[in-house]
Length: 166
Image (cartoon, rainbow, N blue to C red):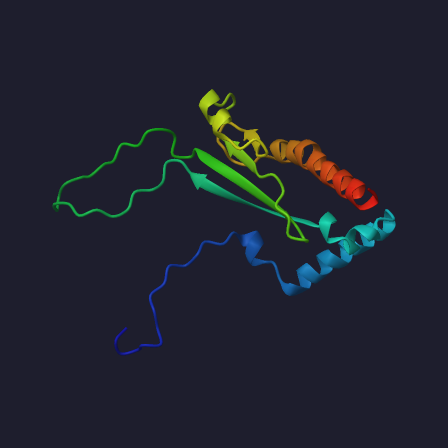
C-alpha cells in the first residue's frame, strides 16, 4: 500500500443480485410504465402533486449483533453467550412525501404480543407492527399502507382543504 498510495483497502458492501441488475434504463422504464398506468386509470394528477408522491425505505436493526474482534490468548476458544435469537430484528419503515413531510413511521417488533412497556414507550403517532422475527412481511406492510398511512393521508388532506377554504 505504501508503494501504491492510490490504492486503499476497503470492505465490499454486499449487494443482492436483483439490486445489482438495476440500471438507468430499468428505472426510466419503470417511470414510463408508472406514467402509462396512471394515464390508464385517469390519475395523472397524482404525479403533479408532490404531497401525493411517497417514498419509503426500511432499515433492520439486529437485536443480537455480531461480536467484534477481541484480543485473547492463542490456542484458547472464546465464546460470547448472547441473549435472544440471532435472527431477531427490529425494522423501521420511514416514509416521506415528495413535498418533504414525514409520515408516521412503522416500527416492527419481534413479538406477536409486545410487552406493555414497549407499546407505552412509543410516540402516539408511530405505528406498531408485529411479526415473529421483527422482519418486514407483506401483510404488515399492507396493513400499514391500507389502514394507518391511508388514514394519515386522508386526515392531512382534509385539514389542508378546510384550512384553504376556511
